[in-house]
Image (tube, rainbow, N blue to C red):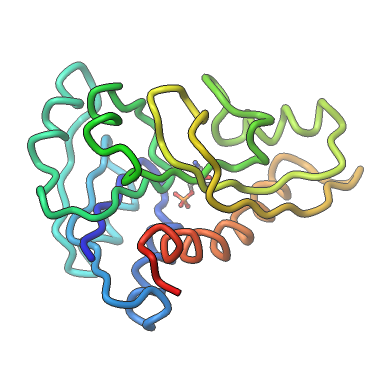
Length: 187
Ligand code: GRF
């Protein structure tokens, strides 16, 4: 199975995906391409792993450029800390084949502006008793697609946006490979 991964940041989820493919936890799969919308460490991780990689600077041509470079035989497009918003036509062309990981328990704390520490800050301000991560299908509505897997953890009075971010990453590393297997029909 051919997986394309889109990144904008440090790429620790990309790393986890590449590692779980190498270890056989995601069987019969390869990351065939990594696309970044800005210079980022995720791109470096792809290079180090000898994976084909492309930088398409974000901007008005991003959507059409992306459409041109995704190989037709792609089975799954994975957004792993990817911050640009995909065009509705792109989402519709690849319906059921694009997934995203979101650092909260959707449908809570999703939508425009809800990314990175903004999400964790909002969770603290709302005095939530738990947070977590969600893997979901990507549709034109931001963070609105059907959930595939979700995992939560308790939030305590001592938590800060920083500590929540760490806990979120831990659950992401667990559920992302599992969700990819689920969508690819493995076990
Ligand atoms: C993750 O927490 C993901 O949920 C969010 O951005 C973060 C990316 O982290 N969308 P990394 O680049 O995979 O380390």
